[in-house]
Image (cartoon, rainbow, N blue to C red):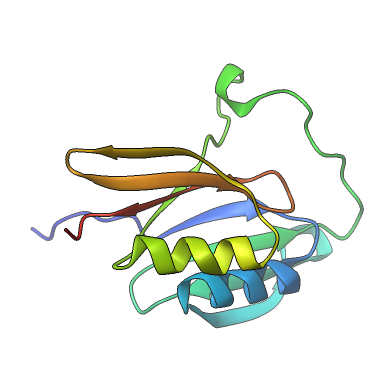
Length: 129
């Protein structure tokens, strides 16, 4: 039996191409696939050989949810990404105008959080010493 692993997460965004460019800049990921998707929408798959983020936008405009995902059943609270160099990654994110918060240095690693243009929270973590 193989070991299960998370292959992808699928999130609704306002502009999947812009999301793809940010993920490429922040993490060095690449667009694995892009094309037509559910209900006339568009999806970009951005990641590496084993996992990716599917950034989907519907054909028709949707409204952002104002309530906290932490208080809604089924809410996406954050996407965690493991990096080798936490400081260099944070600098790339800050260079794009994003504010980082909730820095933590506790076992088993260091981490920080930030919100992207669509209000999706990312946790960036490093297990390197």
